[in-house]
Length: 462
Image (cartoon, rainbow, N blue to C red; front, side, top):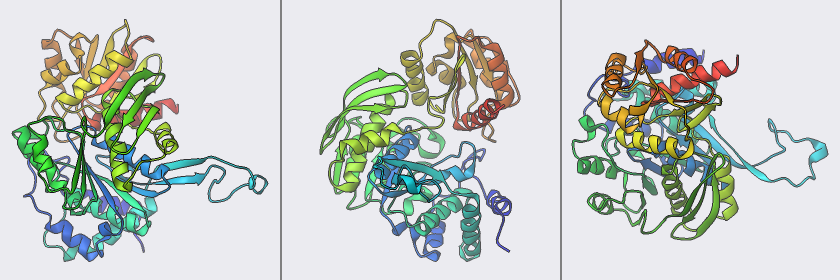
């Protein structure tokens, strides 16, 4: 009998999970991934790939590029990490220009002659039955691999296989960690995207920014186009010398020419090597997302080898959703989720709250973070040294910083703090403590944000 989803997930979770490991990683080695892919007939070569890395913003940029390619009429596979609420959301397909009248594959006969606007559907996560099938297919090949693959390698191989089986026109693949030895780097991407470089995972990638940059530059392949969001003159040469056929750099070849806060997002104008896109509405929060949008549009242009139609850009971004990235999950009190997990991301989150969600009332924050982060530095970067209350909780990961350490750091900054044993309890405590005009910020780790998102969605459903 074919595996059930439960059986497939149990097999998956039996693998080493380096994303959740307390420390360290296996020796840098792509041989297991290459062998798995070869046994499957190299599905990662069945479609062109846009490969995305960066310290911050790579998940948002991956979703933006996916939306742009789908709005251009392509079926696009999207691979992201980590999962927020379920593992299946990491493998998704977005379909572009689907008739708006078509539901479940059928159109109302009375409306057949009506003119309709195209729309973008997706990204739609892999159905449970498909996930079970593709994991079972990988499991059948595992005995033929020298050394047991990791959980991330299994998921990556499954994604490549499913995209090929789904006959996607293209795939947008987010790096898990670094680039050079990341499991996704078996692809030969025609477009390599680097959003930015800052300190994170120094124990694995560092300890210097130059070392982190060198790891991320490993995704650049001969003949590819590099779309570079790094503007630091000391780091850019690491990428520009990585062997791309052509390179476009933020601030030199593309960027934003206008950016202002709008209701529910931002109104921007973008300049790229091939075109200018004026008054584009981005339904997302944060000035840092404007740079991500510029990178994404440049990447789509590089993929197609020319400019995009303005209505394609408008359509792609109009339906954009970035789960867990300064996501509004409630009003009165205002509830914000943001997966800021390093100092650079924390500063961006603080700037966004100050610019787009100002208020005379205080901030009640739920904070949990992973090891490798200094709690005091993170809290200060998040602007929480003036918070009304910090509710500290452990992130649902073996790598969590104990809640007591986060609470102690908050108290050392002169902020009232409470510590609890789980994310759900932290969310309930924060909502109970917040007044209708307060702002509740849930942040510090995507693991915390994912767990809180599930709690809030269940709460909203009654």
